[in-house]
Length: 129
Image (cartoon, rainbow, N blue to C red; front, side):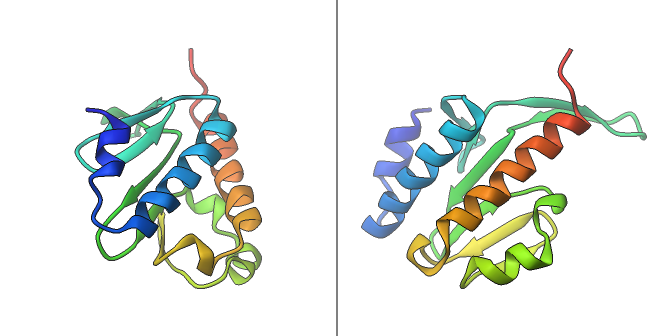
């Protein structure tokens, strides 16, 4: 599926604009073009993982999803340092995700640092053959 078509059909102009900003940031940080990862996640790059249980699969190095109520940015836990979260701005966080209504509510430099840290940690944990 086309990433541009997916973004363009979002009903909120602000969400479309914010998605384009995130796309540019994540493309710069990963060096990878955006691709659809499932029906609603925009991913950049791919890594393969295998858990101790033997379960394996693949996931994007960096990713976000422009959901109807808010943006979801997928980050590894190591990128969610309390001091960075405190500086980020208006958001909420769960184990592997950041949620925000709009990018204007946060400090983009802090978000960029968090995404960069998440990518580096993922590459270190799952080096590609």
